[in-house]
Amino acid sequence: MSSAFSIPAYETLKIEQQGDHVLLVTLNRPEVLNAINTRMGHDLLDLWTRLTVAPANIRCVVLTGAGDRAFCAGGDLKQRNGMTNQEWQEQHELFERGFMALIECVVPVIAAVNGAAFGGGCETALACDFILTCKDARFALSETRLGIMPGGAGTQTLPRAVGERRAKQMIYSAQPIPAQQAYEWGLANHVYETRQELLTGALATAETIAGNGPLSIRQAKKSIHYGLQTDILTGYRFEIEAYNRLVTTEDRLEGVAAFNEKRKPAFKAR
Image 1 (cartoon, rainbow, N blue to C red):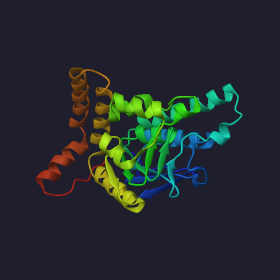
Image 2 (image 1 turned 30 degrees about the horizontal axis):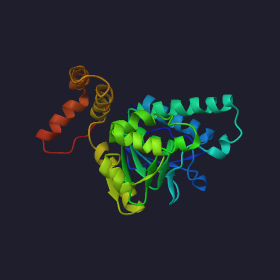
Image 3 (image 1 turned 180 degrees about the horizontal axis):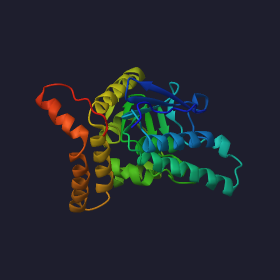
Image 4 (image 1 turned 90 degrees about the vertical axis):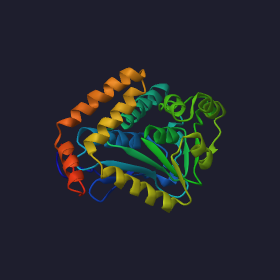
């Protein structure tokens, strides 16, 4: 595995490496509340694909939004205004591939929701491994208000987070819920007082994750994701297959040696 992650110059994303193993990704269209246009769709798909194919030294990602108003307002409806059916579906195919690439990214991705997360913005946060937020944030799957429905896996990820009945309420009503309610419902893991505290806390959480065995995290992520789609015994069989792949790794030997030598392990992701 190479020592440095290759970061292209994205038009709609700000990419900053924090320390050796954490990547801070900022949706960077604050003038339109970080709405997702076609260019951002291409940028996100490329980023999640790169992180899966060759994560190099990156072990955790924090995803947030630029500005002080929104994490992401969803799809860019101004760009979509006047699109033909064909153009709309072609763009949505791009977005679909981006959501799938995010869900299946081997590197953990933490959503740091620093403002409004509506429609596809909320679905982007839901596609991450978990959500941290600030008290001023709001969450909504607002698509039914526009005569469409969630199309970024929201009908799948939201019920898994909050349960069927609460998900139906959010999707049918298209009404936003505040950060505290999102936390109480299980949508968010933690609510911070300010946006700065959110970013600091998210990066600290990412650093903690990055200090653990990167291969262990990836295998655990796969086991959780695929195990939830089957019965518990089949899921457990998948877990053991994932576990056994770690037994022969250098990182497993290093982890045990570090424990016995009372030092911090130096994992190499191999």
